[in-house]
Length: 319
Image (tube, rainbow, N blue to C red; front, side):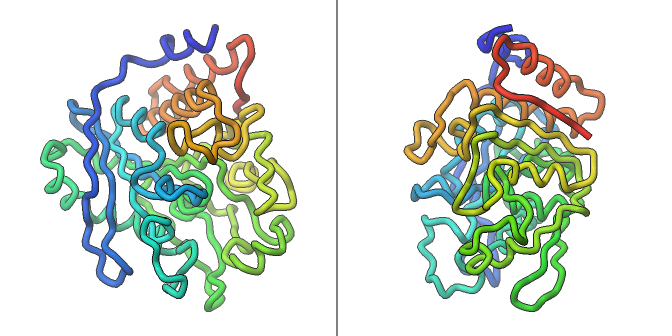
């Protein structure tokens, strides 16, 4: 099966997509109100929801509601409502470095997703074309890089707050499944000295109670030397160190951008590869489809299509 027939064999034609931004959710106590982008198919009801958390790249706008169009557009065109917040860590906000939680606002990021879940009524009122179309019982979270860390906390990962030494549990039971894309791995001696010193919340990440079903996607060339001394296998930690049910997709020759998931033709993608992005789009969609609709065959079909290709783009394992 060739890469071109992979799509035809597994997916229906995309639907037209409605995208609205910014939708503003009032956020008392936050440095600024929470702005989100909402993308959805133009038609259909009982639509499942994906909360998409951006990473922290060098570009000014990818780390905001304006990033990750290759994922948001694909998921929305195939039946999901995708909601993308601009986290306080976004370069677009230019917050004072002294703002509590800076620079990465790890706790606020997870709290943003809870605000979205609490704000579905506000979102439907702001986007009347969505009124009554959300399936609030089928919600997933996805995140790339730092966004993967945010997603892992909502899925059950724990850490120790470096400010007061307490264990932080931000597990969100309304979220039924997740996707972690090039997410950070464990802390301790896996981190570079700079990260351990300047971003101490990374040091105590514990995946042992991350029980919500999740798909981890990692590139086998994603060394991330600014973060870890371990090499590409570090990004598989959320799979290796967490309990099942979990799945791991390892993409061959993929670096941190996983082919370009953060945006179309962006300069910070070091491994630009449209076929790789297409594989990420389809595998993540299929995984969430099957997790949110037990018995759906999309995940099995996507895995079979990946491995049946003459030159597979990656491999899949599950536990």
